[in-house]
Length: 431
Image (cartoon, rainbow, N blue to C red; front, top):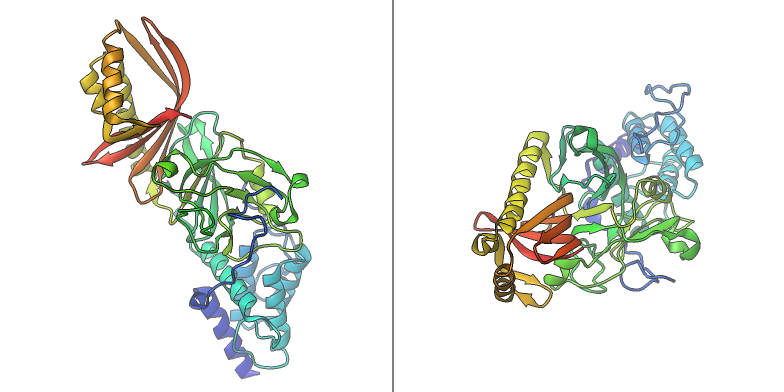
């Protein structure tokens, strides 16, 4: 039927191009209270061997990413091979029986056999809000599949991981995407891409400010616990990993809230819409299980950005070298006992707990007056650029301080902010 072919093909092109994204998303509730976190690796496998259809693709799917299969389904629709599209969709449903988006596509394909259709989710009894959710998911997944970051670029934020941090997570809330990177110590600690996954973020977007605002925070965080499935409500799926929001910088900026987790989906749901949590980062259970194998409680950084900035490896290396020299200059100036030179590394807005810069400076002058020598050693250094609006880096290290009258070891965290073209310490304290 020519009309049917034209309408369905045009629909697929519109959907794949993302032109329907303005229709909005449904916002799911969360019975757990503020945000979602309240108590109540390898590359993807290849497609399975199978007989090829007319489009040259196997008509069965293995444990491959849903984006790849969705792209193949829409390619078949655009080529008017609706039977092949249906076969791929049914194979996807055999793999993920609770995948609502695949059920909707299957319904459209079956309906298109009988009558022309002119919309996504054409069944007469399809709820509009749920169709909008699934449309948003389809567009988000397809855009991520077709617009991957350059292979020779890395996220700007992963400047240096300490040696025992094996992996790092970077979340792009605009793309609803989580990127997993390995600390490639054989190549000087360069971040090496491992895999990426579709995620759900807060109903009202990102840049969390307060309790209950239904937003996902932006910043540099770390995994703080592993909550097993057995201790959680079904809402959280196969497990949950809280992160340390609000961190020291969030509190200094007046940001509040609690209970931000990485977690899975309910047992009757394969995936949630791009904006459906109360602030948490939500993965499918399958993807959470894959990511969880690489998480280290207390160590794995989770950097959440509204839109990831990417650097070429050359630019990344230059920025890392510059910041490492800046940190080393601070360490050397502390050892020198030249207090004025040492204090030039600190912002006039510096705070350490309730201590202002003026109080901190007075204390340092008094302490250094009684020092005959100082030795400071910095080990296990990590340097991450904060993805928020402010130009800030987060520096964490093991500090070994020795002098003629004091020996002290601690894990320290600093926040450095660029002021008038120079990096200055604006916060310092125990990590």
